[in-house]
Image (tube, rainbow over all chains, first blue to last red):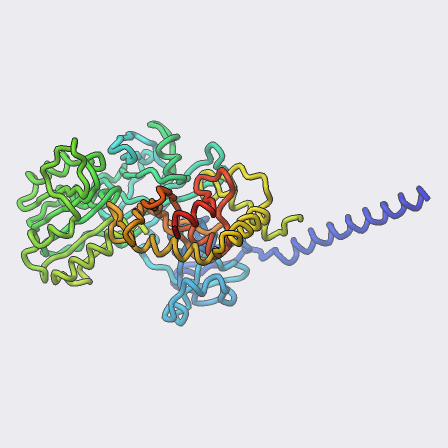
Length: 367
Length: 151
């Protein structure tokens, strides 16, 4: 009896072992795609190990397509045109692609497994995106929940960006957080400072990256980021400018203004910064100081609910009600907005109502 | 019941530090399907469906949207405010799409109950019947939620 049981156990163990060997061999044979070529814009080939997704394969070769979800297929940001290969379109991609994009062969790079040679089209601006290593040089508490952090690049490194663009900061594992995540933050310093940049980061409740920044990072720590990304930047015209921001939306506007301080401008500019109470305002003195730098610039902080002990004598309510006082020619006005989607929606509605052309309203929405 | 491979993947995404700092399960010792089943049974007793609750949450979030700084008094007794932060989050159930980092706080001035939810809460309740595990930072008690939203 006992001998039979041992015999059966032995047989089962042998079968299991054999199956495991078969599985390992199958994995090696069927999932081994060898080296694959990715042809980019018909101009150059890069060689990658087959089996990874296109987003990661490109990233390994320092080509960084934007991604807000880290390749989970849930943000739809990592689009690129696939000219050849890539396999059939997946159901996970369809919801993110318009009819025009589908017709043009646009795909989500995180959903495409590189199993054979593939040809893709990538906008030239993507090639300026690089990964940078940096050291934290300064951390400033701007408000109760907002910090300004200055990063100095490694010696000899420099970054080229347009004022208004953003970078993706990469976290390191900390506390219970085992994975690295990347999050987008607008650059708040001027592009002329090529060896460093500043980000303005507001603490997000339960946020993995902002908690790391606010509670764990200190001066001297090493960090990495990729960038620059984004098409929110100042257009080179003579039109009057209306800047509108709230919260950490001040970051790209600060970058644009500091850039204009270097290159100079004669444009009429008004900057409305909306906040609830006095404790939500920051960099007020710095912005006011710019009124003396530019020939026609006004900074207007606006509080919607100033507290009694704020002793606030400035503008109140929502920023929109003050637009008619400063827009002299709606046809010759550009607006640059950065903040919550609620603010962006309300401001666009007010501006178009006043006659500002929709295609002259540029914005960077949080949501 | 042993979780399936798909459930294990969902549970993995709900752990602290994967999508949010503290995750979605809190200190709850029940299995994920038990958490959902217990909340569904409670909803049944309350005479509401998860879809109805999510629709009501979305209604209030939309109403407070334009009053982005100060909030809005909705239907005469619900004080609602939505704060939006930069960025979006994916659904731990693997649903396609990303959800705003938006916090809506509603105070029912008639009964004094106050609840706070995220855009992801609204989606997870409406699509997955998931109110998060007990002890999770954004756990919502169905009974309190129903009283705050409907009374």
